[in-house]
Length: 408
Length: 179
Image 1 (cartoon, each protein chain N blue to C red):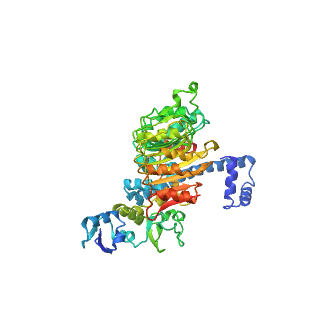
Image 2 (cartoon, chains in turn green, yellow):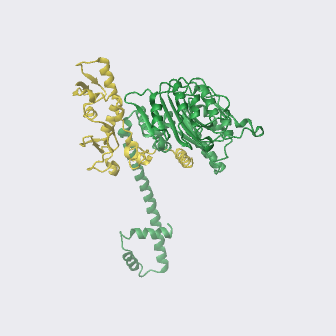
Image 3 (tube, rainbow over the protein chains, first blue to last red):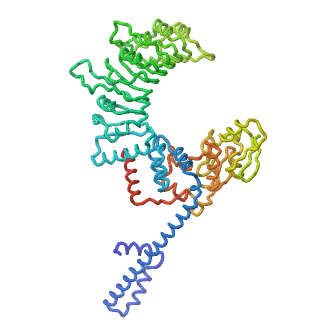
């Protein structure tokens, strides 16, 4: 025992006996003893201490073992073991919340070996949205540990599909680590906050057999592709192996389209396009859309010919948020001339982000002739007058009660 | 009214809208139509059925502290009993739990009864009575899962991980921190 421990022990034992009393007792005991005798007494006491400590260790071990017996016996008769594993897995599933799912799944799997086995053997518990976070600042060791952990996570959900989002430091990801890419056929949705076209180009080559939703975020794919010298193959991303893709969110603010998907498969589209020709090029191919939000300016890069697109026969809900600078002022509603939507039921026109929210009656009437089944009209931040409003709603087949809202 | 017969042969006349919270019974009633025939519930005892079919305006869950939680209101805290975590370990096996009903009456059940109710809810297919909250951390706003040691303590589960598994768990937690 070290002197520090001695001191500590004496301090702890003060409550049991008086140190002053002990000193007096030993003084009496050694009144006629030599220094050598006292040193011998000390040695004897030290041996006794060692012997006692050994006994204490044994007793502590015995006590701990009995504690373990008690815990194990209580464990065996704990009512929780009456639940069938299927029901337990169901309750685990209910317990895990989307926004804390990593912590929740880990906590439940770290309770005991039985639960761990059950949780690891239940793929649906691992199918909440998972983020792939590619960082620059990790050391190689940490990067490998991160990838190992991520792979362990993704493997547990097999064979089910999982929603995936990708977050990466700027300019680091020109490719996805191969081992992660191997799980791409099981990705149900793929979300980016920001993504480089070269990365998408690489990713588009993967099989994305279960991908239903692709969200390319707010990235402005504003590539200057007019200059042939700048054009590279990697500047195009063509998703061809996406048999289940139905929902797409993308923004393309250049005059050239750089993302390609099987457009005819899409049922839901959120599109931002600075050039209205691009928006119409895309819509012309999206023949199965049922819901679309198309954010555009009304600026046409090919103004000489009126661009016609096939009727969007399945489109029920259309939202058109217009935006643009002074250069495109007043042009927003030109876009309406080109949209035959015979099945459209709900139309929202949002002028909140345009410099000149000017209302154009001819364009709206022209549009209404191609969309005779509107029952719900929503106008946001438009500058139409009362007379224009009366004309605007004249052709709307409002149900009873009518569904119309104005945010002026 | 619907006549239910439990596993211990007790008969219960219960209002139809109450028993139809059970998808199993609802389907049975739809299959047989209007009938005076009793519906046998061989997997539910009378004591459990009493708890499950108490007239309600919408209790949805029982949490680990055994409270019924109404969909229409926030968790009702028991004014009279401390949370189960604050009880001594000796009390855990026959630990009593407060069940706060929608009508603010508290009834008390032990943990065995709580799990019998869960089993019955599963058999009767009453999803709302499957209590996930006993694994959730009531002290947090996000209601995530309780820490493992807390779950162990609540349900007398022992930590039987090998050192290798403990090392794996440590790595998992480091990954979760780093991701």
